[in-house]
Length: 173
Image (cartoon, rainbow, N blue to C red; front, top):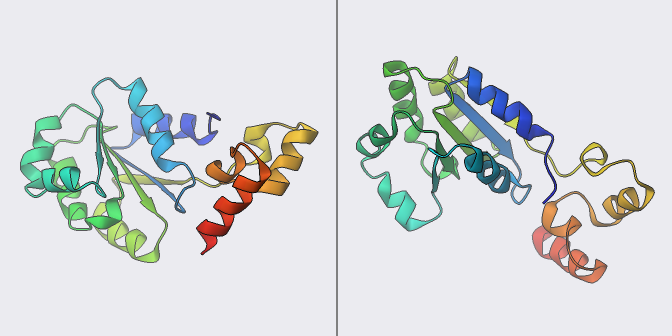
């Protein structure tokens, strides 16, 4: 596991804002980063909206989320349920506590527009990008590996160059 520089910034944002958003392309490490933050917060609840069981928990979203008034609720793949944005606004306005929601989603103009309209003044966004030289260190071998494999975690951390190449090729297709 390579510690992401953005983690400290997100932890600080959770102290200052009711909703923190992590945006980034698919497979950049948003979920891994959120799970690391969850480990620091014993009260955190994690929902992945691509899992039918988690998606179904939010069929009565207000009832479900009201169970966790004093907890950090992490909602992954938020773009799968844009109807949550107005509810999150209402819940924050009703009980404004910083660090209440951590939402994750792929960067898309639609997601940004929907969230911005509903959550203005309640949310701060952070974009997670692929690994950078700063995160990996200024070591010649690491930089060459980054140049060869790219900065997406699965590709960069692959056990050999062939698997890394196959993974990048599959991702692009």
